[in-house]
Each structure stands twice: as structure tokens, then as C-alpha cells.
Length: 488
Ligand SMILES: [Mn+2]
Image (cartoon, rainbow, N blue to C red):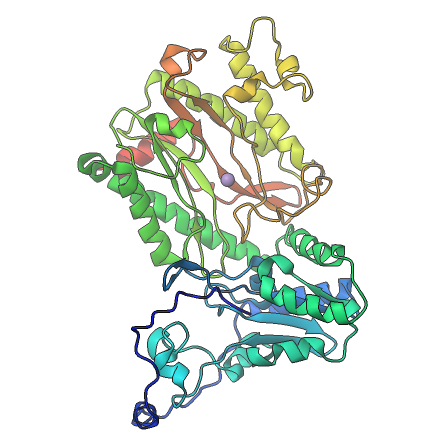
């Protein structure tokens, strides 16, 4: 409903005199609005809305997109709608800030800011919304025909929310837009109070329903993975340049960002481009380091397509095209752990079984290398209560759900996430790693400064799984040919 306010700059020109405004409104070729074709996503979104209202019958559900956030002074961050809003409208990158979807007995209505006419001050004097500044925006008819729902001006939202419903039967997705939540809260003050848990329940439900992806969502994930694959190809082609230029991690980050932006909406999360010892910093996103032949570079990156679905892939590449013996030894251990994790991805298994399978292999390898403290067995380190020594070298989990959010469906309860049963249509990552920091005196000297993670995006199918990123080379030999084939 309300984007963050930008700083007021008094020196800016205002709307001017009536004569000037009339002049600015005149002399434009009239527009002939053409009916917009129904978007591919519209029917899927309609199905999701029906399921949602079936779960909360007779209620008014308020799902804001969220607003612009100020980056500094009078510039905003790029807008990204709340995931639940995108899921229920089918609007992705093209969603308008401050829009609000309302579902109730009238059906589905999208409240948003249609473009102001050319004789308005907004048209040419509002640099944040005016079409003169930001380009054409859709009108209500276009939104209606494109999405197959009702559309209305944002200004009518407060009245519409207050009308003909018991405030006790309104739920709002609070986290998406505090201003819209405040409107609903004011209605509740006047009417019967509603427990805050009612809103939280809607939020959690919208996380839960996105666990199992429909056919269209799976198709979008395939596109995101394919685009990410092309981005990784481009990185490899650019490796010699990244080495030569200096500050090569930034070059790698930029090359991936270029392809993400060109093929999709952008990166789904800040890319980790971690060469050498930086790979041992799990969230290395500064990407200020050198890329050196002889070292590995760990790249964790994903393209977000226009529908906002994102891939999340990690590959660890030998910059010069060949793994050293020590690098290969670590790489093979991680690959074996990933294979074990992948084998556990099948219906009937629990989410936590994937990590259990992968981390057992990690623990076995660490034990085999003699790295666990004296006398500690594999079973002892895997003991959840009293073990955990292996975590010094793999501190993170093996999997998370993936979709429109890189860590998708995060609001789930523990029972539904970690203990949840794997169902066909779920998409998740399998991403074990091993990290030996350069200054780790407990690591064998030959391993110090080597960090490896391998991450793929996996769809649970009726009888097992499909690795959506299987086309991206993964074995040590295939990775070597991939790098030496493209980096010239
Ligand atoms: Mn991941």
C-alpha cells in the first residue's frame, strides 16, 4: 500500500502552473488500448486461489505485494513482490509495487495503482510512478484480461477492506506490507478482536502449499536451471580473463550476473564466487579475491526467471582445468556424499533422511582420514546429542526446499519441514561440502585451503527423483573436460 518515503528534495521542479500542465498534457498521440492476452500463469494462479479460499471459507484474505524500499536518498532498491503475492496472482517481475490482492465472497480483486492520465501532475511530475518517467504501466482492463481477476484502484482499498465483512473474518499477510496490516488492525480495533495467530496461520499455510510444485512451477524451475547452466558455461569461458584481470572473483560474479539479467529477472540470491581459501567461508559474497590457476573456485549461484523461480547450483571448478591429487581426494569425498544424499530423495523418505545419508559419508571420510578426535567413532560423531565433531568441516545442512524463494517454504513447522515426508512435486537441493580452512591446524596439510561443495536441484518424482541440473557436469572427470573444453 505504501512504499517507503523517499527524501524530499526541495530543489526539484514541481508540477508548475495550470498553463504549463495543460501544455504537458497536450499533443500526444492518443492511445488505443488493446486487450491483453491471458497470461500462461493465470489459470494456475486461479487454481491456487481456489484452493486457498477453500481452506479459509467465508473469510477475506489480504495478500499485499509490498512496496518500494529506499536504497538511499531518492533511489529505491529494485522491486520484488512478496512470494505469496506472485504465487497467487501469476505476476512475477512485472508486478507493481504497493499492489494488494484481496480474496473474499466477491472473488479475487487486485488493488493497484493504474497509470494516471496525461493531464495529471503524476504523469510528468512524479518521478517514482509517473509514466513520463518510468514508462507504460498496465491499466485495470489490461490487468483484468491478462490475469482473469477483478482490478480496482489502490485508493479504494481501505474502504473495500472495511465493507461488508466482519473484521473478525479478515486475515492479512502481515510480513508483506506493514501499512496494509495497520489498516486491517484499525478495523479490528473497532470490531471484535482477532488473535494475531490468525494472520500467522495464513502466512504459514502459504508457505506450506508451495511445498509441492504444480506442472507449471516445475517448468519454470527447468527454465531457471537451464539459464543457470548457461551462466556457468559463460563463467568457465571467462576464467582465463578472470585470472588475467585480477580481482577475478568479481569478474566471475559479473559474468554470471550479466547472463542472469539477460536471460531472466536477475540473480536469485547474491552469488558466492569463492576462489581458493575463500571457499571455506560459506557465505563468501564479497567476491573481492584473485582467481589463480592451480586453485579451485567454488561458485554458488542461480538465475531467477521472470516468474521469480530460482535455481540454486554450486560447482567447484579447477581453475586450470585439472584437479590436484589433494583437491581430487576432497572432491571425490563430497561427490560420494552427494550421491548418498541423492539416493535418499524418494517418496516415503523424510526430508531429514537426505542429510543423514550425506553426512554419514562425510563422517566416514573424516574418520578414515583420522581427523575425528582420538577414539571417536563414526556413530559417536553422528550422535545428535553428544556428537558433532564432523561439523567442524561441514557445518551446514544438506538440503532445503527451492522454488520462488531460494530457501523456499521457510515458515514451516519443524514437523512439516525436517520431519516432513518427501512427496512427488517437491523440489529441493542436495549440497554437501567439505571445508578445510587454510589456518586449520587439525586438517591434513595437503587439504588446507581447499573447500568443495556440489549442489544440484532435484525434483521428487513418483518413484524416486529427477536431478533437474543433471546436464551440468559433476564428476571430477566431467568437470575437468567441461573446464578445459570452454576455458581457452
Ligand atoms: Mn542452496
